[in-house]
Image (cartoon, rainbow, N blue to C red):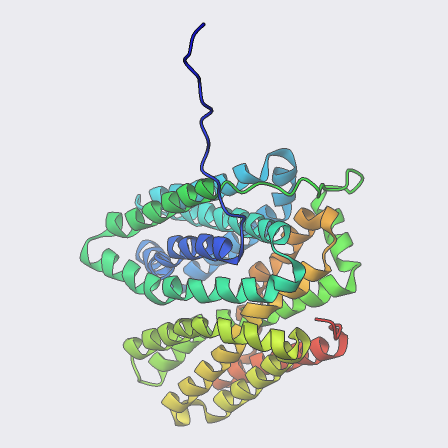
Length: 399
């Protein structure tokens, strides 16, 4: 009789996914996206040589991205969630391959790949979070996720511009490929799986229009979308019109860049806002944040070009309060969505990002035809006050 015994090969046990798991994934993803966030518009202008055409290009990409987002549940339903996340990582890398061609078709294809990749990663990551994090821990998990992304959004754009101007186009986009592949490796190392106790209802239609109808029919989901839309409109305005304001008032491009970097650096305060939400409740904290943001925006619009640096300070204070909504706002959706239709509703919910990139420039173009640049901040302040009222009036006290 043989005395040789074949012992089983044990796979190393992984600890259950927690807030740090998803914070680390989001941080690496943020580096992959933030590194060329300032490079892409520069490339587009170098190719097109016209600001208006660049705006049209961004509008086209945003509209196509909106369509992709709405169809994402069909992909999640057809393929395993892990493969959709994997495809999102690869799309970020493939997008940079298109960008290095430095042609208009390559620019368009690269921007589309970037939008599709970001959409796939955002929706699937939110689904994983709702599967693995308890509802009572959403605030802590989301605040930690925002805080960890601070390093990427503070240093990433500067790193991308440095690589692009110092070492060329291949260096900047090569960094994106490296971050995207690192994200893919980290994701598979965590071996995340779908929650077996949660399955999408088979009777629910996968048609994007039907999903929109289901979403709109639920008041809490509508409110969650409004909360996300309002704070995303702030960031769209801050990143575009903040630097523009500094340049127009004579403070220079460097001042505009420092303003954006300082706003991103405040993301570490997300941990503080997470604790505040747990201590005082999400409803009170988000309502306070919206009204405080509105106050800062009214002050920025009132001061205007009379004291540009003071206006910048008010905008930074507004960013501080907006970060509270970054940290807590998504919990309104996560706590309200039904488990069996998370994928469908998550796709519709994410359209707030596309609409927040499309709507403000259209509204501001009308406002600026009658008033100065400071009116942009006043207009945004009115939206913030509107969102604050609806948050206070309709968000349940249990949040």
